[in-house]
Image (spheres, rainbow, N blue to C red):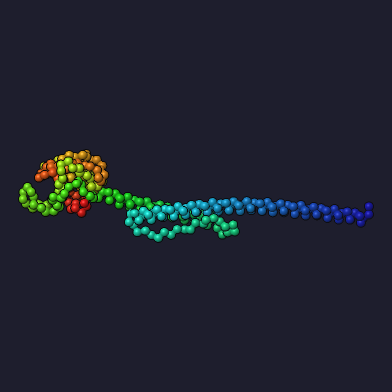
Length: 267
């Protein structure tokens, strides 16, 4: 073989090797790029799914905060507390296809802020609920209404005693009624004392809390026991003529922090 032919074969062989190397490198680069694209797509899909989960969680928390705020406003209205203007964060509502401005970190911060707002709302609602419960308890413990059916024969204040003829302080109301007429509790409470005295006869004393006490005297029969819990409207005794009395009637007395007050304001 001639030298020229050998050179030609060498050049062709070298060119073939270079071509194979280039093809191999191109194939390697292409495969690597494809793998990177697949990996990036998977990572992007994972991130988008995570963002969508965050968005759903954000919406759920927003709705919960809104519900708590509305419930708190209703409770404040019931409790007679001034309500504030409700300002709530707007829910995301979903992620647009091309919107990549929302990152997982930003939504996590928003969710964290919402969780703080939610906890504060829960604490406020609990405080208002406790206030409302106190107001309801106070309302139930405040004597109100007539303790029996009858007519007033003696009022609260100074009067001439039917026994001595002198002016003395009458610390309650006398309500005349037939013997055996039911006597009712005028507020919730606990029977503090069931007793008999020469002055008031068979007597029931109910402690209502908040400083209120009611006294029912001259009854013919007592229907409750000391320590018994009482609701407003429960029958506690029957009208009678026991003790120092000129006829069947109920002596009804109301005290606040130990001081007698006029029960007519509560009838």
